[in-house]
Length: 391
Image (cartoon, rainbow, N blue to C red; front, side, top):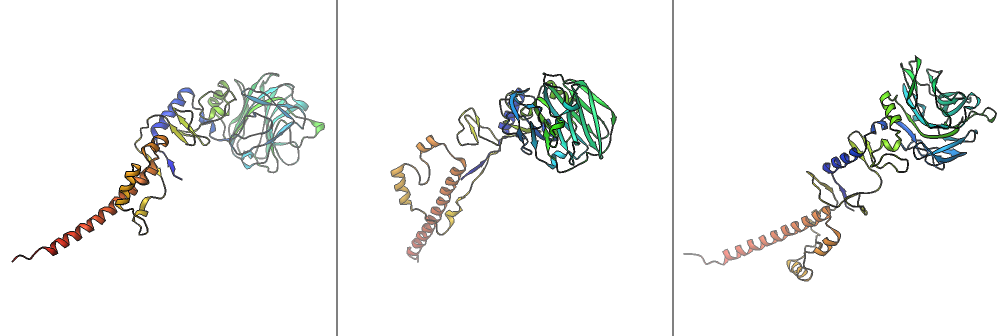
């Protein structure tokens, strides 16, 4: 099989320009993003980053802030579980958690779990975001082995979507942003997030919470995201003001409505497309990774192919006689092994294969030329031998 590798910078630049004209570039939000959960359905809890998928029980799919969301009943059997992962320990000096919540009841038993990563066998957390009985948000970290809580003064009202963004960075105060209002902790703590293994990340409830002490969230959740860095205030404002979801971080041709999937992923000045085929000027690319219905201008085209025709110069190669070539041309109207004009019109010209065939013919011509030169040299020698000696 011939493999094509097209290095066509002009097309990429043009395509990037077209996408940028329709979409702002939000690919910076992919930097440091560990996991992202769009929560589009209750049967598959997919990490958009492809790393930490999970499972759900006791939840239902409902209309969300972007596309669909999941509804949590407030029972300890209504939750999402993400299996333990080193990346989710957040064992560094900064991180950010974002989630859209639509609470339909105040926090139960003081606080209801939005998201938490527990430790040991108790209800304590390495980190957590919770909703309390006063409609406020509590953000917990576990810095240098010490549990530290910060509660917002702003509220996330019942029966309303609120975007919550919690950030912590060593040496700086924690922040909780609820929609457009940012609350900042009065204290700043330096250190690292304490790592405790053996517990899963859960959304909507504790993984070890007993039924008699239910602290499970009641309402809807959407767009759960975790970064291993503290997002800047400007980045947080963009997330809130533009109501961005994960699909908006990837380069797509339309703003995110929750109904489309990520098409292009961008990283700096590079864009990537890893599934499916691309058509430019056509909606039927067929089996080709790139199909262009039009002209292509490039400074360089590199074609990777196999079976390069050095075999023509091997002793076992069956070089057809010129009589055989002449007979083939008379019958078929084209050289042996070369596609006919009709075949090219129907199937197109495969650049790598055609270059291989043309070189095959050139090398055959070289063999014919060598043979003819030998015959010419022999005839010249015979002529010289047959000439009478001059006296």
